Length: 331
Image (cartoon, rainbow, N blue to C red):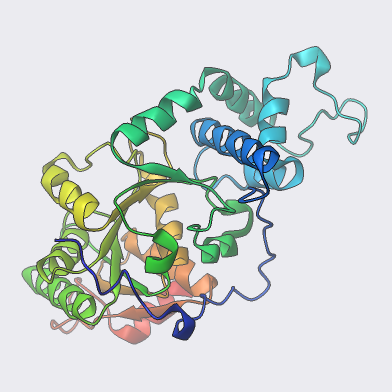
């Protein structure tokens, strides 16, 4: 059964997540109304951004800077121009359109842009009952703009819910993959309690704490969002194929990468910034000192979100440090 409580929060009483201090606003580029010409512009923008999700890696601030300057369609057009026609009127002689960005990075972008098939990717996600969300869409969570030039190019989604509405009342529960029974119990209990109170539980669908958080929300017939480091049609880890399917049916599966994309170590870390920005706060349930989940807490702190931790029941143990250490490590 699709959860009803998180789908109808009182948004008038739930303000947008505050921007991090000093974070410049990133203008929305997509057009959402205005007749046939505007609709065509939005279609071009969506197609360009779909292509760019295959062209640039998540969180690439160099690419984000050029998207901000040229727009998604303009950036893509410059990548696809023949070498001899690439200079622009607003660049210095010999600089090219991307001054300050390394040649190897630009060469990689151009190769990927030439191979991208955005229409095919859009058809693939639509066949799953999904969609591709871009900045400027009414369902785009504006708190993601706090990431500045590291803002996602777009988000691929599976599931029926409105992401912006759900994100307004959401909490991230993250932690170790190799968690203890205590950690799994706490994550499940927290997720169940939050879901029953109408909060949306956000995590990364990994083994351990993530899985316990999703299952706790699902068990309460609540809402949960899985933010993946791969395509939304890829079940990773493979052992969570059934869990991810349940999340897509009852909640939302989201990711920056186009259909068929597989995760890499760097993509897991970069995915965590989206979890931190999307939610109102992050709870680290259980993690060791070098756990990737601490990057989510650090990102949440930088963005001005609430950052919390669960104390370990084992004094001096390696499972989890006290809250005061959690806050210090996230700073």
